[in-house]
Image (cartoon, rainbow, N blue to C red; front, side, top):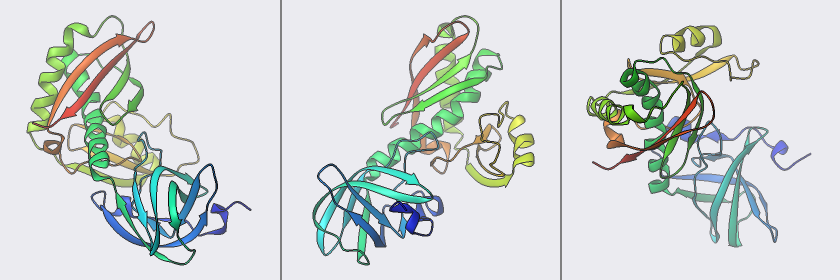
Length: 252
């Protein structure tokens, strides 16, 4: 039995409140080694790698030690905090976790912008291009779209439309629904669930109100105005019929 299989699923505080920066929890397991220290808590606000979003960073502090969180993973429904632990944290101890908010918020802003941009590109170009893959980093995001020819001539319009929608301060709505309902819902926004594993029956949908909606397990800002503004960085060809657009959220 692995360390994470010994416990009930971790309570995921980041889904209850994506803006939670500090929390308390009970340390369920602490595995210290020369290579990496691993900590399991009964609840956490640290977001693990997944849902198209990189993991959080921050600190977990106990009475006699502090762990600098460098990676976060979810395994068998337990969140594993991979950290550099100085001193000691004892199983059963109450600890305080502090999320690196600047990192988290930058990722949330870029992630929400990526959702918005999927439909922005369609509106600005007049083509219903399918998103074939996406990527999110701390300082930028990207979309790879099926498109014949170059999207280069459309970049000024793409940026203009994006910033227009951002200024509308549209709410970002998160809801969970049955798969069949979710399929019909996202189809209205030119999206599908074909990349979602077939065993997933309840689907978490993220919608930029009346603009774009898709299945997503990541974290997002409350409204488009919080993105700030959009800057389109570049386009490139990723092979025949696939165009990549890179962009980032900037402070207005």
